[in-house]
Image (cartoon, rainbow, N blue to C red):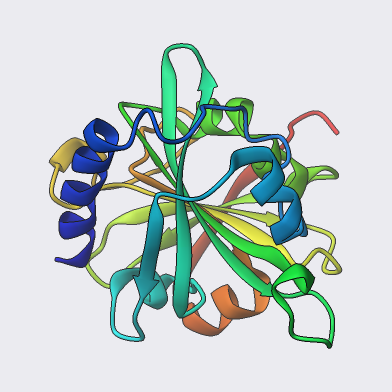
Length: 209
């Protein structure tokens, strides 16, 4: 499985490259941030991560092509492998015009949906107003948690998935569920890949608004 191969790569990268990239909070690493700003804040990525048209991430709605891999800490005891995709922010097509249009996170250790939202400001920003909490059932019958902005003008959604190789992580059903992968994805691409899937709205986040 493609994700399994990548997990092995992550473990090796953690050991081999830990001194080559300075750990930093991910505040500037948000949807719409320029490539130049990220290069200034975090330096060079560890390397590329390619999403092919037939892999698991593309099936979720992740943009196809090259992504850049970073290791970033949210707190002294927590780290995320952070994988960033750059889309074109203007018509000139230059690298300086590229902006973040999608993010994938893999916690290095157990983390719940609520913990990811607490640690990662770029994810919270997607639900700066309010998001529906939606259970989405995949073809295997496992459930994942979608945070979809009620404001249809918001261009990103958040998606939290478990690890099908570990039974207790097979489904993500609440803010307290442990996640293996967290995504901030373009709304149009996500919806295109999820036409006709079974959905159930179970609440809203942030609650009380």
